[in-house]
Length: 337
Ligand code: ACO
Image 1: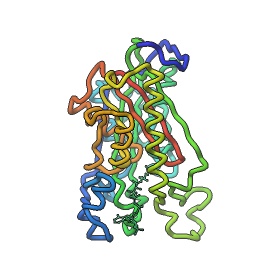
Image 2 (image 1 turned 90 degrees about the horizontal axis):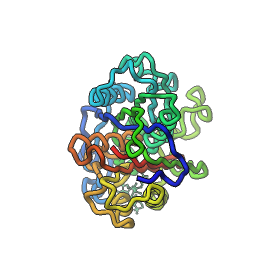
Image 3 (image 1 turned 60 degrees about the vertical axis):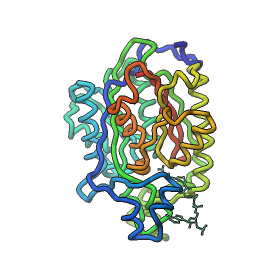
Image 4 (image 1 turned 45 degrees about the horizontal axis):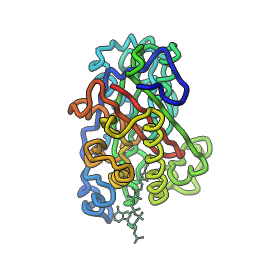
């Protein structure tokens, strides 16, 4: 394959060598939600494609799920935790304000030689984290990296608000990246962007430095996720189409050469619109939102691990990850497995 047109010609490539995911035990169906708020399985499924989601218990947390996903990915890659140089966790529902979730994961899995940090890009967290780890591997500073997307949005959800509580689920997905030298394998291209002027469309405002826990809130709903669903829907379709087109152009790909597009699982209707606009057949676009809802930064790595396990994708295949989320943030990666 030609090098992408971004002018990069790295000596090293970031190879994907292992994947894993972890979900909370508890399943919450649309009917379960319809018993609490004025909605129905039919409404939720028709508008979003979601049928059920996993919801973390009081004892399940972001670091717990992230660590479980990491162990599976390490085992698949046959990498000892002590060999890891870097851990990045994409999350907006960290274990605590600080220290980072990545430090909790490091301790839990025994990655004694890694340096670790979190990256907050909401639903784009995994693709941002993957691009970041890629840079460290390509420049030679890191040989083995653990990249995780993990979120427990249920903990920021108002379960009495039917406009948001139907959308989200909890989970974690992990990937191991290792340094390689074959120019035709690994992450071939990454792109990322953001636009802070649309922050109000999707946010959770408490408790940061603007609204600290020590001060009473002017609006108690600031502790919950707030979304302008229509606005996000339209922006998401446009941006996801642009990103996939950019990936194909930069990597000189035609749709036949792409084995699978793995989009952020935000809404099945959004994914269908994107696929239709790009004339991508169903079998090239992975969708698992029916079972898990929108798991934020975890959605792409969970879907990736499921695709690998089901052998929908295998060594040599070209896969595109594409995401859009709060910020607004967006990004994509092209990888040859
Ligand atoms: N059940 C029944 N009716 C509902 C529900 C519900 N759960 N939620 C809203 N409605 C009603 C509204 O009150 C409204 O009623 P009205 O016409 O009488 O005023 C009607 O349904 C239509 O509401 P809309 O918000 O316009 O519904 P829409 O078709 O846009 O679907 C949805 C809403 C599913 C949220 C959609 O806009 C969407 O998927 N948006 C993008 C997804 C998104 O924002 N995800 C959050 C990402 S967060 C992240 O990724 C970190």
